[in-house]
Structures are given as structure tokens and as C-alpha cells.
Length: 157
Image (cartoon, rainbow, N blue to C red; front, side, top):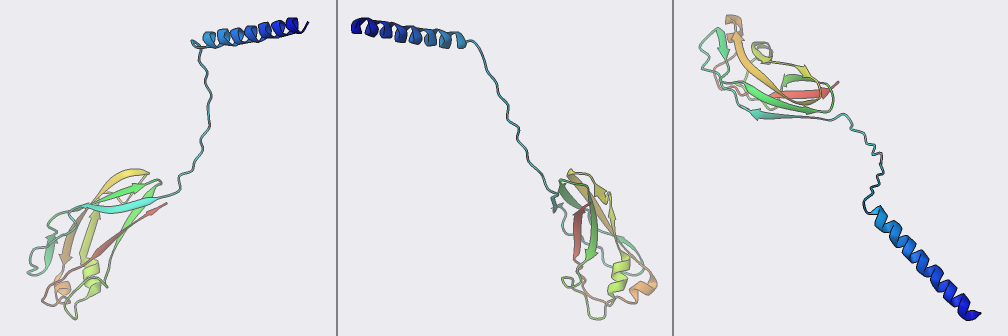
């Protein structure tokens, strides 16, 4: 009887192995798919850089008139949100002869943007320069070399 039980158990194990093998072979041609949901958040982020013509020269100022800058500046804004750009003169980094009027230079140095705002993504901004001086303006600017540092600031909305 033990022999019969052992033979029966051996046959059951063999049948199970053959059945699993047959199912495995049948599954080779089938496919299976699952999906996973990946969640993430992108915060508001912005970067501003000068990509072309970081220095601007003006001809010698010989009196009242409008003097155009030697070339435009190209800025690059990379942002994940809508943005706006502005400029200001950094007086602590600028150099001028003693007695020169900052107010005159602030008023006379025009910075003309081809755009001052935009949406998310990568965008270029071109800035051109003109120095427009009246006779009264020239009277507030003594002879000498002037170096004005302009700072551009981009902020997200």
C-alpha cells in the first residue's frame, strides 16, 4: 500500500509539473501590461543671463543730441512661469567723474526692450540703448570717463 501511495504521489507530482510546463509554454506568446502613475510638481523657477553683447559703447559725447549704443544686448530668460523683466542702474558699481549727476544719466540713458514680459519657456530679449542729452543735461555732466552698470531683473508673475 505504501508502494501504491508513493506511485500515486509520484504520478500527481509529474502531472503537476507537466501541467505547469504546458501553461508556461502557452504563455510565451501572450503579453501582460501594468501601469504606474508617477506624480511630480514643478515649482516657479527663473533664470536670466546675458547671451550676447554684454558691453555697450557710445561715441564721444560732443554736446546735446541723441547717441545710440554700439550694439544691443541679448538676454535669455528661462522660466517655468510667466515673467517680467526690468532694469536699473547700479550706482555703487558705476564710475563717473566727481560732481556728475546721476539723475541726468538715469533720465538720459534709454534702455529699449523688444519685450518686457513673456510666458514660460526659453525666450530671448533684445535691449538697445540710446543716450539723449539736452544742453541743460550736458551742463550737469563734467568731462571724464563714465562707466554705468545696468542690472536686469526677471521675476515670475
